Image (cartoon, rainbow, N blue to C red; front, side, top):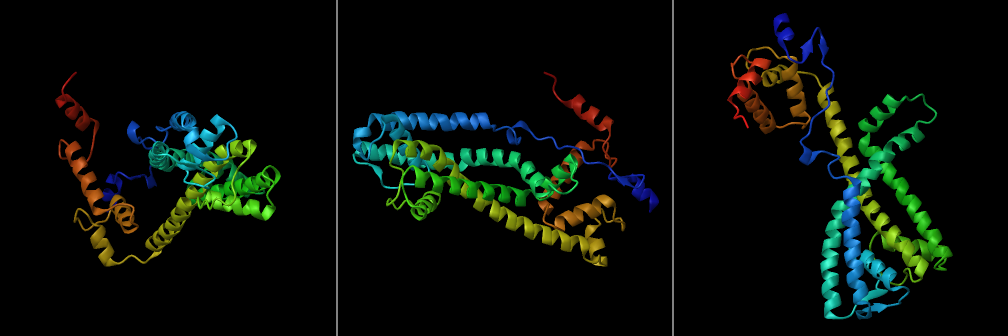
Length: 321
């Protein structure tokens, strides 16, 4: 029994090896799609939309303030599907362009802007954790661990805080600049961020539309992200409940038989961990089979372990450039 444990790759002198950082291929690296690239794509979309809609401004109905500003404003409310109805295409050409830009805009908003929101939220999580635990003696490592452990919760709280701030800002702006009552301003804010766009209240002044270009983009995407994080939080809570049940339930003889992958009547630490991960839904039988097959391919000498010699033998058979 003791020999079996000492041979276990996850154990060494009774201790489990420390976690090592995972290496991801460039195509799925979390930093691959950076904020600069997202900004360039968004800027290209808005620039193209502004040029197109400014050239056909006479084919768009509604109150005019400034040629460029109105074109950007129309592009943004089309992209976010806010659709107040205060401006709209009248000719076939204008309607055709609007159709093209609404589909490309929704795709852009669903991908690029959500990525941008994730990028920003991930960098604000630490600040939120610090604020929540300001009176506690949390060190830098404790804060990072807390943020990672409860990632879904802090992402949700961060976006919720941002939404409340943006709604307050929008209400005050509409009240002070667009001269709406506080109730009507709040009503307009709600209709805007949910993209209801009844059209009875909207941004009509030059300053209002300039503000709306940035505010509408941020608020509509933030609200969409809020619901995404809410579902993620609910799923994470269910996963944690399942994990707690799996890790604390009484182990049975049937469990040992299922966990004994190599049928040697002994369950190693690696086998136990794999069995528990499978119970928690972290891995599937298909995942395990793929990993086992990969191990067998690397185990050239069929010793049941991987060594430097195995890798050297594999490298010797690889074609040289």
